Image (cartoon, rainbow, N blue to C red; front, side, top):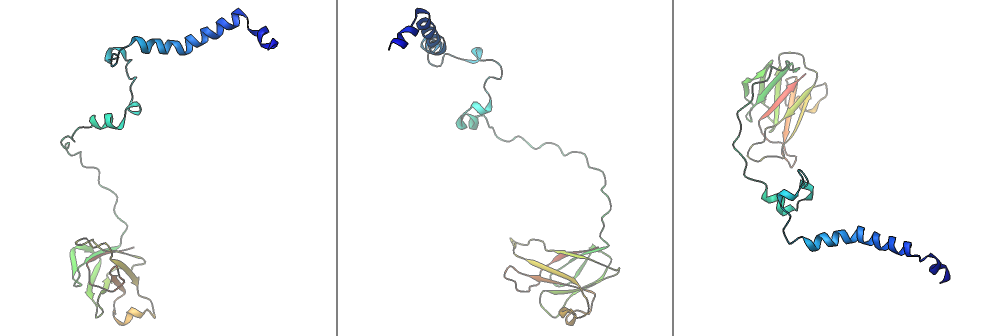
Length: 182
């Protein structure tokens, strides 16, 4: 206790009291002098209230209805020519859509449901097949192949290319599709 009383001088006590008043008392004084909701727009510095400082409820009141759609922008420049050497849209019945095809001589539905035979008029090296989603159909699977010797589908197609369309369960089915060759 003697060590503590030696340190309790008038100046040490006053500095401690002053620190408490300055650090905590100023805030308490300001709070006691300002009435509820008395700080308004004039008392706030510009950009003092940021979206991060607002509650979710306050932010939701700041969002209004979407405005009208703006005018369409200018048409962009013509893109580079594609790299496809041949492409086609084939209907579910095997008909070739000539308006959406290039370098395809013929297309037909084989004797096997969901297997299509295609004859390109140019040499092709790779194939990509996709199906448009029709009526919510999202489970259609595709398989395409450039026929090689010994390919089992060769029996159904005597053409250089075949495409098989399967539904979400894996069963072959007739379905329109797009095919692209490089």
